[in-house]
Structure formats: C-alpha cells, structure tokens
Image (cartoon, rainbow, N blue to C red):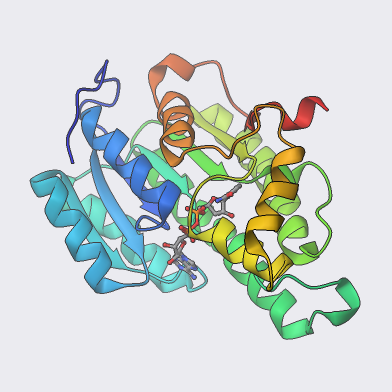
Length: 260
Ligand code: NAD
C-alpha cells in the first residue's frame, strides 16, 4: 500500500478514521500511513478491516465499530490510547446515502437511519474525540460532509439534511475546541468514484445508471467525478500542522461544482 508521499507531515501522529474500509476512508488511511501516521481503522466489516490493516502492517489497528453506538465510539478512541498512548487526529467519515426517493416516498425509518449514521455518528465521534484530544494538548478533526451539505439534492433529502447538519456540528465543535488547540473542519466533495456513487446512480435511474452518471457530470465543471485520493489529500492537509490556522471551515473538493 505504501507509496512515495512528498512529505511526512503526520509523523508520529495517531489518527482514528471511521468508514475506513470505504472508498474515501481507505484512501485517507493510505495517505495518512504514507505521511507517517499510525491509524485506527473503524468500520463494520471485520474481514475488510483486517485485510486493510494487514496491508499497512504495524502502523494500523482496527476495530469493528458502528458509529451510531456510543460505546463503540468510546472503544475506538480507547484502542488508539491503549495501542499508542495518544490520539491526535479524527476523521469522522462513515456515512450512508440512504434510499434515493422523493420526500413523500421516503419511509420515516429510512430517514432516521441516514440521520443516525451521518449525524448522530458524527456527534458521538466528536463527544469521544474532543476530550481525548484536549487531554493530549490539541489536535484536528475532519468531518466528511458533501456538496449536498451546501445545496439541495433531489431524491436525497435525508442525506442532504444530514450533510448540512454536520456543518453545524463542526462549527460548534470548532468553537468548543479552539481554546484547547483543537481544529475542526469539514471536507465537502462533489461525487467521488466510490461504491456510494454507484448506489446513487442505480437508485436515481435503475434502468440506466450510466445515464444518471452522465447527468450528474453535467453539473461538475471539470466533467468528472473526484478520485478518493483527491479527497484524502485535502483531509491530510487539514489534519496536518500546515493547516494550523484552519478551523471552523468548509473545504470543497468538487471540480468547480459550487462555483456554478
Ligand atoms: P463508501 O460507501 O465507500 O464508504 C462509507 C463507509 O462507511 C463504508 O465502508 C461503510 O461500511 C461505512 N459505514 C456505514 N455505516 C457505518 C456505521 N454505522 N458505522 C461505521 N461505519 C459505517 O462511500 P464513500 O464515498 O467512501 O463515503 C465516505 C464519506 O464521504 C461518507 O460520509 C459520504 O457521505 C461522503 N461523501 C461521499 C461522496 C461520494 O460521491 N462518494 C461525496 C461527498 C461526500
């Protein structure tokens, strides 16, 4: 998995990454390890976690942790402290898209599940990370929001609401963290080439997912989806001391989408 990182800005740091075996989480973990960090990988599937951790060797630990469960968030932070006696960075990235459906066709249970993972999960992660980072003298937390956190997306109301909501959580956390040298930001990608977009394309046009992708591309000035590595690069920057004056911010990586 290792490649030649231009820098090792995260040397010695310990990071918790949720949603670690998904597209963006995996690329972020790889980038972090390349830059010298040790990583706790948190996600739902033990086999995928164990395979990913094996690829990183002693720089990685893993835990099956459902972000909607308080105790499992606690256990994920505790693992970092047990293994490496510190934690410096959180990447609250676990998320689900939910069903693609109009508001009046979306079951309340579907809405609740998206909010539980995408909003409650971030709240619970912050609640564990903030005191742990405080005790360590500071750190950085990055939350994966979306361009759907900045504008509407038809058929994805729960997802859109959730990605707006985490911007509110981020802003409050940034204010609470600032006196303790803790920076908190969001990254806001446009569509990225991961499982999630394949699912959204199929949900938007079950008979023609490629047509759905073509339509999504018309809204992106660079005329392509992002690559997970391009989001990982932004998360690595925000997690590093190079971003020492960046907190409370919303950072798009969107091929120009929000300029339009
Ligand atoms: P992905 O589906 O590949 O990865 C998401 C990961 O989150 C999966 O590994 C999944 O198992 C994990 N996860 C889901 N529910 C969980 C739970 N309850 N507890 C722990 N882990 C859980 O998708 P991705 O594109 O890598 O998404 C990562 C983040 O980026 C998400 O928050 C997503 O909303 C956001 N995002 C994605 C895109 C995109 O186009 N792919 C765009 C903007 C934002």
